[in-house]
Amino acid sequence: MESFFEILKYSIPALIVFITVFYLFRNFLNQQYQMEALKYRQSQGKEIIPLKLQAYERLMMLCERISLDHLAYRLLHPDMGVSELRNAMLIAIQQEYEHNVTQQVYVSESLWKIIQIAKDQMQTVISEANGSTNGEFLNDIRQKLINAKADPVSYAKSAVRNEAELLM
Image (cartoon, rainbow, N blue to C red; front, side, top):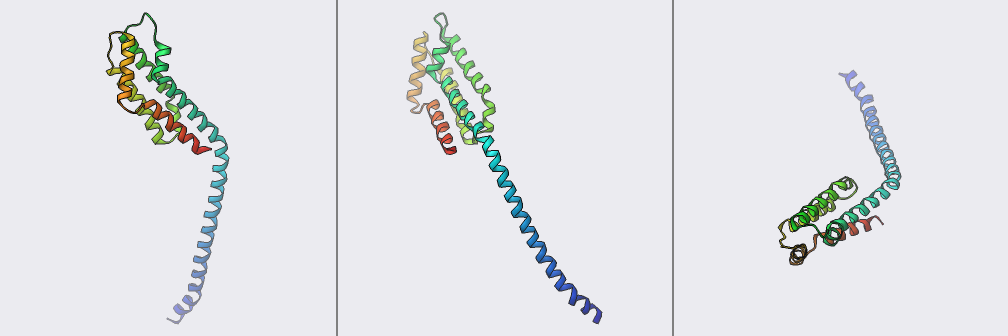
């Protein structure tokens, strides 16, 4: 029994020293890891910020290109019927969206959802619009957007602008 106490007399202080060194060393390594992670994020930030700004630019261009005025200007031809114009507008919106879908990597999830909602609402308004002539059709779309009290494209452009300002 005496030898057991003798072993404890040396083991307990050694164990206390070991635990103290272990925690100090672990804290030191965690601090070093955090410093390296910070340096890495700072170096990545220099590369990512231009990509994010480019994404905001492309999303702003997407919003411009799916707005009613720009769609009508680009797609309306004198010999085009209402159904042809409607289909051309819906296809153009979908193509613009698909062309810019990769930009969601660089923007917040909420901004990307706003972009998706703007696209979907524009497609819904165009799908539901009526008119016997292209002029009546476009006026019906305008009227539906006015009645909605919030132009989805303008709201999306505002959201892109607001998030881009956070980088600066």
